Length: 300
Image 1 (tube, rainbow, N blue to C red):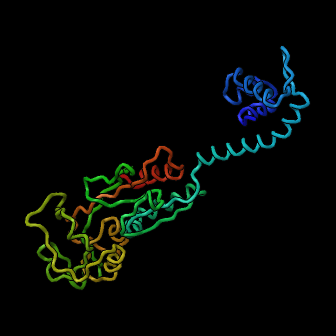
Image 2: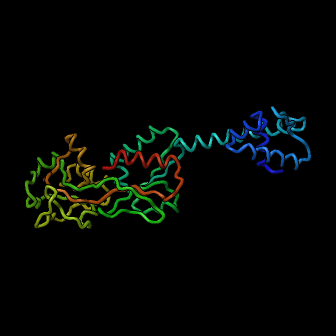
């Protein structure tokens, strides 16, 4: 017995006619008729009474229809469930990024708003300095930090640039009250300095009002060299000294009056943040929704 033919017959019984089943299945009436006749031939019995005006089920046809109808309804319910799931974001979204970027207010707000907007989703966010293989480790998306001008990606990954980020100099009002606020790069000497370990590795030079400066800005030897932006943020708030922070970390504290931007006309390009995800023709709805959401909330 051919299951396709059986399914077609059950649709005829459910619809009450060949034409109704054909319309429901988006098939020509001739195809529906051919499948039913083939089923009758395989069973060796007539399932439909045919006349010029209508059809009806024979006794054998009625018995077969009553046995197959529950399964048909279950199949239709399963199809509807899949179609609904395919259109509504749901399930666990796995994200990876660096600890500093993942704990930034912008990313936290983006992830929080996504969860509120799509209540059937959950977020599993892994923060690590390691470059994660999204495909092999089963991640849906990742935020990658990379040199400006380079876009991460490969044959297995798609990417979308989101924003450039910069470093600037910050200090607490208490520290500046104690040590004084420098008004030029030359006055950095004599101050306690805290730097991210990446600051000196990035080839980009410090700029003044967006323009390259000569000679380049040089810091005294750092008293604290840290590889985590959250720790630097706490050092700045604790009044440790002049601290180089990403502007997306430092500026909210400036707005609250808890940090001051020192030499505000100076900054240094730190890099670019991009969103990456495994290349696929059929992304899960939650992944498509998050890509659109992240671009809307984070892209410059």
